[in-house]
Length: 579
Figure 1 (cartoon, rainbow, N blue to C red):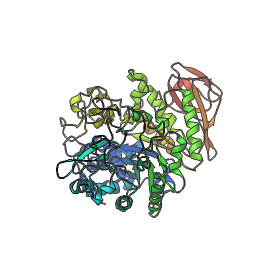
Figure 2 (figure 1 turned 90 degrees about the vertical axis):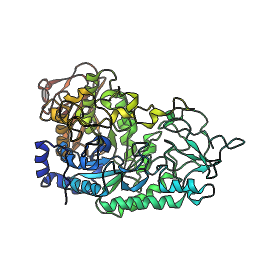
Figure 3 (figure 1 turned 180 degrees about the horizontal axis):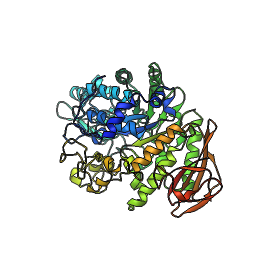
Figure 4 (figure 1 turned 30 degrees about the vertical axis):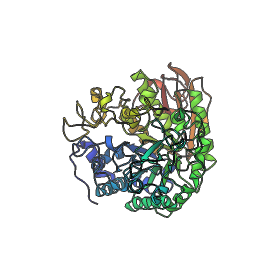
């Protein structure tokens, strides 16, 4: 295996980990076992913002490769990479021009190969994004469709339709873009006259494929094979719910449609026809050795609808957005946990749990807007709750550092396409605030770019707050009270304790109002989890010996007591107990 040499600085601890990780029997056993994905902890890397190897201010694949020992040390099982394909970057790479080419801003295909090989050498799986709902307007198919004009066979691979109105001047229907404004853009024919309209549920630079066309099916089977042959362990499917549109493309009937997404049926999302596509993909995935998986990003009205994507002959996992969007409330969390487990158990699929990603406000801010200290306290408690639940957990880069949302980015540096749409157009979309969770990670140093790139005063594609000097990896390394060390301790315990992650249910125990208490049992060992979601200390009988507390560090708080005593649970805290 050839390892890339880069200018990205790694700490001595990371280098020590890299030297010894290949011989770690625990990691090798975890990587080799069947059904690894059922209780895996998967770490999302947003390539633009993880690590910059060449000093251009943009994260890249060699930068990720150099930092893989950090993720191994953190204790995750797999790495999920957001898109790095050839793209004009109209939507940060989710507008793909060529699915088999690495965009030069991120590196080369050889860099991708080296990353996968290095990750596997460290016992880490690699999942990559696939974007099948739409492509870039610079994709060869779409460019040909425009150049050839009406009647082009290539247009049948997209949604080209004549407009309504006497001169076709109105969009074909009332569908709205998730980013705001109409979901249709009118073309100009080669002779210069106004032409048909094409569908784009996101930015106008992202035309939707028509998945009724067999060539689209075959193309994506080919793309999947390309990356599986390179060695990736699976795919996260972007907009997995959007590939099939309702027959006849009927109107929705009212504006502000983005508010319906994930809450009510719409004719362009979660149509039953998507399931046949994923049955095709499952056959392909199962033809490869090594438990290759597919994970659906599927915004559906209910967790029961999400479970349909996970029937035994379809996909392996689906993101649990219902859980992500549940507030800091004991009754609401208990209800969504029960409902999620019930829905997934009907199809024998693992539940998934996630608190943050590249599209939502970081949970350290979202759980207590306007109060940074309270937000971090709740975020730490929420993490220990999530990691104790049965199934698979997803972490978003930087949450292990306790990073808050950056809410004061100046308008001139923003790049989220939703920020530039909606306010001056008919219909409203996303709020355009996704840049705040995508700010590059702070690794070391006392001023930006905090080790993100090789130069001490180099650029970063989005500016980092000066206050992040106290949140860098280097600043938190070895500090038992830091969020980084809490994550490391929790993931180490999760890997070692059979009752964490595995299984399909929780046993709820009696608890005061505002407190959750549940037991997990496996292989004759029990673990009890207490979560105090109130803003005050709560006294409960100690259910065992404390193992980990979210408000302290790798060692439990001294006043928690032990079996047979009363324990005072700190406000907004989670404790793991050996029960």
